[in-house]
Length: 244
Ligand code: MLT
Image (cartoon, rainbow, N blue to C red):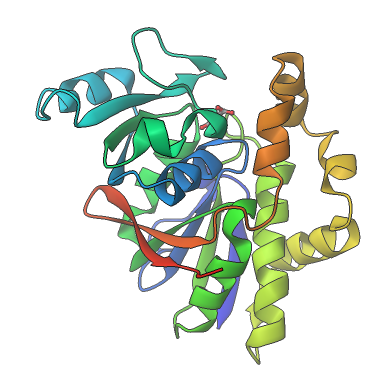
């Protein structure tokens, strides 16, 4: 099994996803929020790139069956029901609903993975479930880190490293590209205190300045959303829930 890590979605070469499983990661916060919503019983999440796109899509849904969700540059979007804080996506708010979501980097990274054989939604909050699922498949895997404004973001690469580290305990003959090796060794050397490493990253600092410390704490809690989630035909759904 070949594992490749891309630091930002724009660095994914044409055809690089063909026949591969893509694992899309935006730890702070889009994929953590999507997984929190799914684990709390939302029906599905539909990612979109533009705010307008979300508003137009909502016209196809019954009132009360959907929520408008997301952010721009960390801030809530005027007129939307929920921001991009995973802590807002409680069972009371999201159960049974379709979430129409746009975020600055994360939702477009998901949509860019569409040429892959299968697209998995990953964050630190589901690393065990994701690694177990990938280990049960035969395909090569491409990790696509959402990054921040098309720049490398440490939190995403650390999450890729966490999954790769687990895979290396489960699968023989893994073939890692250079960034996969770096991701795994970065994760292994900092796994007992991720905050201490990630506090130096741009998006972590921006979130701290915005008073979002609780969101960071949630997003860096390993396996708090133990599900496997797949993006297929424009929709993100849970395909497997780990029983506790
Ligand atoms: C994004 O998609 O850019 C992020 O999830 C930003 C955030 O809300 O922290």
